[in-house]
Length: 345
Image (cartoon, rainbow, N blue to C red; front, side):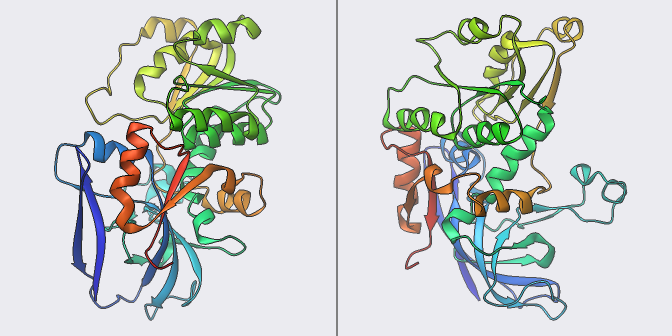
């Protein structure tokens, strides 16, 4: 059968491509995409990526259409989250209780989540109930935020600064509160655009105690008014340059976990290693491959502990993808999180 999907590169060059889905293999499942969130990675691709167009979309909720003859874990009609990278389960890392180090992952084989149909291996699916498709597609990004908080190892009642008020940063702040943080601050660019304003205004509703606008306010000054020695933990969801601010505000012996990326040539920063050593600072990257923590993330959404309706401010059709991504990049729309819903849904 034929399936369509979107690919993109720099200058909002978004292309529709059609591909052939072969007869279903015995361990595979055919799913129909119901909703797919726009990730910061997608925005990086259509703003900065100069090589061949990349498949767009990996925050996927879908419905099972057909299953291979060996598949017993899902059936047609089930609602599922599709993992973009799935642990193999049989390598040394997986069998040693460290699946995060798996190097034999199953992936989407270049299939874009912003499309209509996909064929994926059965173990790349997480069945869910009690959530609509649009809310459910937050499972993948929430799992990333949850993992960043787990890496941060926040002490009970501890202090946390989250750098960057995008959807991942906002969810990291919310989960930090759920995880026992006594104080959470979030930083972001000044509220000069509709997008920036919407994100900063949402932060207190998700539990942030302070919102710091970078530029009009100095991050280090504002944090050290309350925590002269710095905060216990810093979570960096903004681009790599923000790590320099993180190093200024983390306390002696603190932890910085980070997952902000940049594909436009700004992925390198200069760090004083002596400062890290002498102040016993830990830098821990969060890279959400393979997919982990999906069941917990889905439960947090289902139970309302993370409010999907507050985060998802915009839905759009397949045909409106370019317009929506342009609105996110230029900030003209008050978009916190945007989710593509396939035409006709």
